[in-house]
Image 1 (cartoon, rainbow, N blue to C red):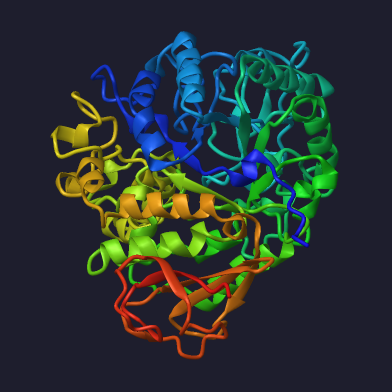
Image 2 (cartoon, rainbow, N blue to C red):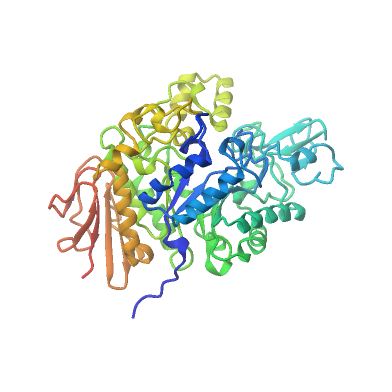
Length: 556
């Protein structure tokens, strides 16, 4: 008798994140746009994905590149019009591709009409739509630090009060304690669902509830501001808000896909967010694996920690919830430059990492350019960075006496702008992204690292991703089977099985530049059939070449 599989389209999907600013410009202004995305839908169909996650496309002053929204129900002019969005939705659906919107519910832009009203006076009808407090001892209400550096409070003389901003000073936090705020957000979400979007990725959702009273946090070092995550990240009582959100929006529609960005959620708390009986989110992006990214370009990947972290989430949600599988997004430096070896084993390490994460239990997410093995940008000056977090960090360090070279050494390999350089389509000017001046420089390696070249090469990273997608779609075990770690103590290799009924697969990746002996593998290798490999089949079953990955069928 076969295993019972709880099927859902979002479990079987492969999601591709588009960062609209950098994907494809259609009008020569140097900024990607919706018509540009439409022009590349056939490429995405060829790749094999069936969901597009769009980073924010709403009007925004772009203090945080669109994550500071000034109008939830319109399209940023540089991206196009609502008619362009309607055509994107129609064209994508015609190709069997669904659309997820990126939605920011913790905060808005300070240019949003709600905030413009709220800041006017203490007796304005929207006075308490944001989090306002009186100052204390001639300064901010408490000692909390913004996630983007500096105080989490900004003073407004109109009210003679401070407003909370957990992120940029121009991203004031909404007051979720106010039911009018929640209902306004819910009505907006329903408006988009009525329009036909297929779901949402919810940004910074774990920050919507703050510790009651928002007291000072312990400050043993005597700092002017202190890390404040304990005051606002997944704090007690947040599930009341999450349940209210889901009940009044997603639960009213059929087959909506929801993914929460869940900083501060560990595996013990994860079922409260994603367990089927909770009827909240389908998946969350967990942050534990992000701790394994580092700013030190010479640092090695902590493979034992990676095994423990990913296995903890795989086994912890088994039978309860569903994982979101990712190694890149708009907030993460390029993985081949961070975990891999872009200089010596670029193709091999990019594909080894791809096999490693893509075939675990969960829905795989691909960030634009990841399927090409796009690399970090060779930043040489601070003025090359656009990211507000980098700008704030650099300003603070310069005040402390750091040199520009010291700041660059600290941020070059981890800065978010590494992921935001234009998509590299071909070897023409600016990688085919734009006929104009791109808003962020194109990586100079576009002449050899581009989609057109890889599409012609059967052994390319792009075509390896296509094979991963095809293989996963063809196998219930790779889609729904249980995950079990093997070779747990191997210092070079990450290996695991996927098993469903009588079908079993072994995924094995050598994450090092040295040959790896896998003769101690608990799974019999002699009769295993190689279905996919990133270096062909060398006929040697018990060793892996540097950065070699294999997917093997071990079924009897």
